[in-house]
Length: 245
Image (tube, rainbow, N blue to C red; front, top):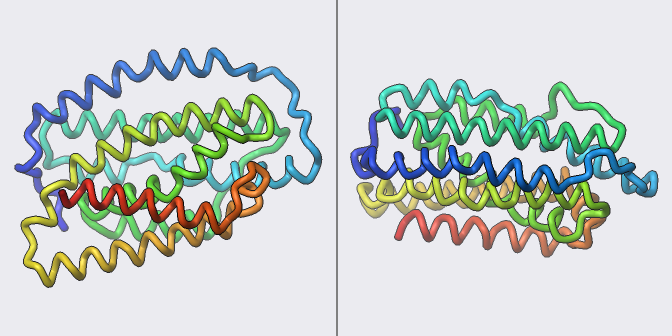
Protein backbone atom coordinates (compact mmCIF):
# COMPACT_ATOMS: atom_id res chain seq x y z
CA UNK A 1 0.00 0.00 0.00
CA UNK A 2 1.31 3.46 -0.84
CA UNK A 3 1.20 6.73 1.02
CA UNK A 4 -1.18 8.40 -1.44
CA UNK A 5 -3.76 10.73 0.00
CA UNK A 6 -6.97 8.99 1.08
CA UNK A 7 -9.74 10.71 -0.87
CA UNK A 8 -12.40 8.97 1.25
CA UNK A 9 -11.26 10.98 4.29
CA UNK A 10 -11.48 14.71 3.43
CA UNK A 11 -9.24 17.19 5.18
CA UNK A 12 -12.17 18.63 7.14
CA UNK A 13 -12.52 15.32 8.97
CA UNK A 14 -8.89 15.52 10.07
CA UNK A 15 -9.29 19.11 11.16
CA UNK A 16 -11.71 17.81 13.80
CA UNK A 17 -9.04 15.39 14.98
CA UNK A 18 -6.45 18.17 15.11
CA UNK A 19 -8.83 20.11 17.34
CA UNK A 20 -9.37 17.02 19.51
CA UNK A 21 -5.68 16.25 19.97
CA UNK A 22 -4.87 19.89 20.67
CA UNK A 23 -7.57 20.30 23.31
CA UNK A 24 -6.71 16.89 24.76
CA UNK A 25 -3.61 18.38 26.37
CA UNK A 26 -5.78 20.03 29.02
CA UNK A 27 -7.31 16.69 29.95
CA UNK A 28 -3.84 15.17 30.14
CA UNK A 29 -2.69 17.86 32.54
CA UNK A 30 -5.80 17.47 34.70
CA UNK A 31 -5.41 13.69 35.03
CA UNK A 32 -1.68 13.82 35.67
CA UNK A 33 -2.15 16.54 38.31
CA UNK A 34 -4.25 14.06 40.29
CA UNK A 35 -1.43 11.49 40.43
CA UNK A 36 0.81 11.71 43.50
CA UNK A 37 4.08 11.01 41.72
CA UNK A 38 6.04 11.38 44.94
CA UNK A 39 4.12 8.61 46.71
CA UNK A 40 6.33 5.62 47.56
CA UNK A 41 5.65 2.32 45.80
CA UNK A 42 4.72 0.07 48.72
CA UNK A 43 4.54 -3.15 46.75
CA UNK A 44 5.76 -6.68 47.43
CA UNK A 45 9.12 -7.31 45.78
CA UNK A 46 7.68 -9.86 43.38
CA UNK A 47 4.85 -7.61 42.22
CA UNK A 48 7.25 -4.71 41.76
CA UNK A 49 9.55 -6.85 39.59
CA UNK A 50 6.61 -8.05 37.48
CA UNK A 51 5.40 -4.51 36.83
CA UNK A 52 8.92 -3.30 36.06
CA UNK A 53 9.32 -5.92 33.32
CA UNK A 54 5.92 -5.09 31.87
CA UNK A 55 6.37 -1.31 31.97
CA UNK A 56 9.83 -1.56 30.41
CA UNK A 57 8.40 -3.39 27.40
CA UNK A 58 5.48 -1.01 26.97
CA UNK A 59 7.80 1.99 27.32
CA UNK A 60 9.72 0.68 24.31
CA UNK A 61 6.59 -0.05 22.31
CA UNK A 62 5.02 3.34 22.95
CA UNK A 63 8.26 5.25 22.52
CA UNK A 64 8.89 5.01 18.77
CA UNK A 65 9.69 8.40 17.32
CA UNK A 66 7.00 8.06 14.64
CA UNK A 67 9.29 9.47 11.95
CA UNK A 68 8.63 6.55 9.61
CA UNK A 69 4.87 6.93 9.94
CA UNK A 70 5.04 10.69 9.37
CA UNK A 71 7.36 10.26 6.40
CA UNK A 72 4.83 7.94 4.78
CA UNK A 73 2.16 10.60 5.31
CA UNK A 74 4.02 13.29 3.36
CA UNK A 75 1.62 12.93 0.43
CA UNK A 76 -1.47 13.40 2.60
CA UNK A 77 -3.39 16.59 3.28
CA UNK A 78 -2.15 19.22 5.72
CA UNK A 79 -4.72 18.42 8.41
CA UNK A 80 -4.10 14.67 8.15
CA UNK A 81 -0.36 15.16 8.54
CA UNK A 82 -0.90 17.40 11.57
CA UNK A 83 -3.35 14.94 13.14
CA UNK A 84 -0.83 12.13 12.67
CA UNK A 85 1.91 14.29 14.19
CA UNK A 86 -0.25 14.94 17.25
CA UNK A 87 -1.12 11.24 17.49
CA UNK A 88 2.58 10.35 17.50
CA UNK A 89 3.19 13.02 20.16
CA UNK A 90 0.55 11.40 22.40
CA UNK A 91 2.15 7.99 21.94
CA UNK A 92 5.50 9.45 22.94
CA UNK A 93 3.80 10.93 26.01
CA UNK A 94 2.59 7.44 26.90
CA UNK A 95 6.18 6.27 26.77
CA UNK A 96 7.10 9.11 29.12
CA UNK A 97 4.32 8.02 31.49
CA UNK A 98 5.69 4.49 31.56
CA UNK A 99 9.14 5.95 32.30
CA UNK A 100 7.66 7.86 35.23
CA UNK A 101 6.04 4.63 36.35
CA UNK A 102 9.42 2.92 36.21
CA UNK A 103 10.92 5.72 38.29
CA UNK A 104 8.09 5.21 40.77
CA UNK A 105 9.03 1.51 40.85
CA UNK A 106 12.73 2.31 41.19
CA UNK A 107 13.79 0.91 37.82
CA UNK A 108 15.22 2.03 34.49
CA UNK A 109 14.27 1.44 30.88
CA UNK A 110 15.28 -1.17 28.30
CA UNK A 111 17.19 -0.37 25.12
CA UNK A 112 15.46 -3.08 23.05
CA UNK A 113 13.21 -6.14 23.25
CA UNK A 114 12.54 -8.83 20.67
CA UNK A 115 8.77 -8.26 20.45
CA UNK A 116 9.18 -4.53 19.84
CA UNK A 117 11.92 -5.05 17.24
CA UNK A 118 9.79 -7.52 15.24
CA UNK A 119 6.66 -5.39 15.29
CA UNK A 120 8.51 -2.17 14.48
CA UNK A 121 10.35 -3.71 11.52
CA UNK A 122 7.11 -5.16 10.17
CA UNK A 123 5.34 -1.78 10.37
CA UNK A 124 8.20 0.13 8.78
CA UNK A 125 8.43 -2.26 5.84
CA UNK A 126 4.87 -1.46 4.73
CA UNK A 127 2.85 1.48 3.45
CA UNK A 128 0.89 4.07 5.40
CA UNK A 129 -2.46 2.27 5.41
CA UNK A 130 -0.91 -1.04 6.39
CA UNK A 131 1.14 0.59 9.12
CA UNK A 132 -2.02 2.23 10.46
CA UNK A 133 -3.78 -1.14 10.37
CA UNK A 134 -0.95 -2.66 12.42
CA UNK A 135 -1.04 0.34 14.75
CA UNK A 136 -4.77 -0.25 15.25
CA UNK A 137 -4.11 -3.95 15.92
CA UNK A 138 -1.51 -3.22 18.59
CA UNK A 139 -3.69 -0.68 20.38
CA UNK A 140 -6.84 -2.80 20.19
CA UNK A 141 -5.19 -5.83 21.78
CA UNK A 142 -3.45 -3.66 24.40
CA UNK A 143 -6.67 -1.95 25.54
CA UNK A 144 -7.64 -4.64 28.11
CA UNK A 145 -4.18 -4.26 29.67
CA UNK A 146 -4.56 -0.50 30.06
CA UNK A 147 -8.10 -0.87 31.38
CA UNK A 148 -7.09 -3.39 34.04
CA UNK A 149 -4.19 -1.14 35.09
CA UNK A 150 -6.69 1.70 35.52
CA UNK A 151 -9.20 -0.38 37.46
CA UNK A 152 -7.05 -2.79 39.45
CA UNK A 153 -3.44 -1.62 39.41
CA UNK A 154 -1.75 -2.43 42.72
CA UNK A 155 -1.16 1.19 43.76
CA UNK A 156 -2.61 4.65 42.98
CA UNK A 157 0.23 5.75 40.69
CA UNK A 158 -0.10 2.61 38.56
CA UNK A 159 -3.87 3.11 38.36
CA UNK A 160 -3.38 6.76 37.38
CA UNK A 161 -1.05 5.80 34.53
CA UNK A 162 -3.53 3.18 33.32
CA UNK A 163 -6.41 5.68 33.42
CA UNK A 164 -4.45 8.32 31.56
CA UNK A 165 -3.40 5.96 28.75
CA UNK A 166 -6.67 4.03 28.41
CA UNK A 167 -8.63 7.23 27.82
CA UNK A 168 -6.25 8.26 25.05
CA UNK A 169 -6.26 4.86 23.38
CA UNK A 170 -10.04 4.91 22.97
CA UNK A 171 -9.66 8.00 20.81
CA UNK A 172 -6.60 6.64 19.02
CA UNK A 173 -8.60 3.61 17.92
CA UNK A 174 -11.41 5.84 16.68
CA UNK A 175 -8.90 7.95 14.76
CA UNK A 176 -7.31 4.93 13.08
CA UNK A 177 -10.72 3.49 12.22
CA UNK A 178 -11.69 6.80 10.61
CA UNK A 179 -8.57 6.70 8.41
CA UNK A 180 -8.96 3.08 7.39
CA UNK A 181 -12.73 3.02 6.90
CA UNK A 182 -13.71 2.55 3.28
CA UNK A 183 -10.36 1.17 2.16
CA UNK A 184 -11.48 -2.45 2.32
CA UNK A 185 -14.71 -1.66 0.48
CA UNK A 186 -12.69 -0.79 -2.62
CA UNK A 187 -11.16 -4.27 -2.77
CA UNK A 188 -12.63 -7.25 -4.60
CA UNK A 189 -14.32 -9.81 -2.37
CA UNK A 190 -11.50 -12.42 -2.59
CA UNK A 191 -8.82 -9.84 -1.84
CA UNK A 192 -10.84 -8.34 1.01
CA UNK A 193 -11.35 -11.79 2.51
CA UNK A 194 -7.62 -12.50 2.32
CA UNK A 195 -6.75 -9.12 3.87
CA UNK A 196 -9.17 -9.69 6.75
CA UNK A 197 -7.79 -13.19 7.31
CA UNK A 198 -4.21 -11.91 7.45
CA UNK A 199 -5.29 -9.06 9.74
CA UNK A 200 -6.82 -11.55 12.14
CA UNK A 201 -3.68 -13.69 12.06
CA UNK A 202 -1.63 -10.65 13.05
CA UNK A 203 -4.11 -9.77 15.82
CA UNK A 204 -4.04 -13.28 17.29
CA UNK A 205 -0.25 -13.18 17.20
CA UNK A 206 -0.13 -9.74 18.84
CA UNK A 207 -2.54 -10.78 21.60
CA UNK A 208 -0.46 -13.90 22.20
CA UNK A 209 2.73 -11.82 22.50
CA UNK A 210 1.06 -9.53 25.05
CA UNK A 211 -0.19 -12.57 26.98
CA UNK A 212 3.34 -14.01 27.06
CA UNK A 213 5.17 -10.75 27.77
CA UNK A 214 2.69 -9.31 30.29
CA UNK A 215 0.83 -12.32 31.67
CA UNK A 216 2.30 -11.94 35.15
CA UNK A 217 1.38 -8.23 35.25
CA UNK A 218 -2.16 -9.03 34.11
CA UNK A 219 -2.51 -11.60 36.88
CA UNK A 220 -1.06 -9.14 39.41
CA UNK A 221 -3.92 -6.80 38.48
CA UNK A 222 -6.50 -9.57 38.80
CA UNK A 223 -6.99 -10.43 35.12
CA UNK A 224 -6.28 -14.06 34.18
CA UNK A 225 -4.38 -14.43 30.92
CA UNK A 226 -7.17 -16.41 29.28
CA UNK A 227 -9.67 -13.65 30.04
CA UNK A 228 -7.25 -11.03 28.75
CA UNK A 229 -6.80 -12.96 25.49
CA UNK A 230 -10.55 -13.14 24.90
CA UNK A 231 -11.01 -9.46 25.77
CA UNK A 232 -8.17 -8.47 23.42
CA UNK A 233 -9.66 -10.29 20.45
CA UNK A 234 -13.11 -8.88 21.18
CA UNK A 235 -11.55 -5.40 21.23
CA UNK A 236 -9.91 -6.09 17.88
CA UNK A 237 -13.13 -7.50 16.41
CA UNK A 238 -15.04 -4.35 17.37
CA UNK A 239 -12.36 -2.21 15.71
CA UNK A 240 -12.46 -4.27 12.52
CA UNK A 241 -16.25 -4.21 12.38
CA UNK A 242 -16.20 -0.43 12.76
CA UNK A 243 -13.60 -0.18 10.01
CA UNK A 244 -15.53 -2.26 7.46
CA UNK A 245 -18.99 -0.86 8.31
